[in-house]
Length: 99
Image 1 (tube, helix red, strand yellow):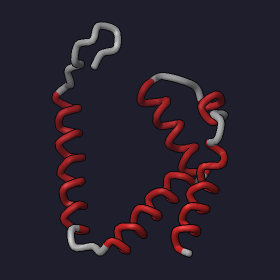
Image 2 (cartoon, helix red, strand yellow):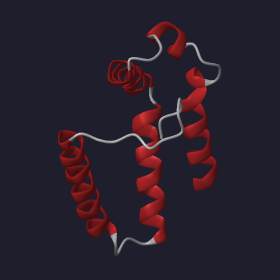
Image 3 (cartoon, helix red, strand yellow):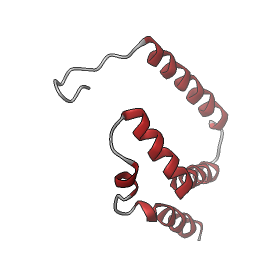
C-alpha cells in the first residue's frame, strides 16, 4: 500500500513478470522439499539463517536494499543496534538446539 494515501500501489508489467518468476521458483523449491523430515527442515532453516546472518551477506543485502528502495544509507543501516551480533545469535541458537 502507498503509505501516503492508503491506496494500493500498482505494479508494472515488468514487476508482475518478476513476481511470477519468483513464485514459480518458490513453488519448485517447495516441491523439492515436500518430503523432508522435520530434522531436514530444521537443518535447512539453520543453513538459510546462517547464509543471511553473516557479515558479508548482510553487507551485500544492505547495499542492494538501499539501491532498490532509494532509502537509507549504508553507514546508518549497518550501524543498527544488534545487527553485528546477528550471526552470533543464529550460531548460538543452532548449537543450543542441536545439544
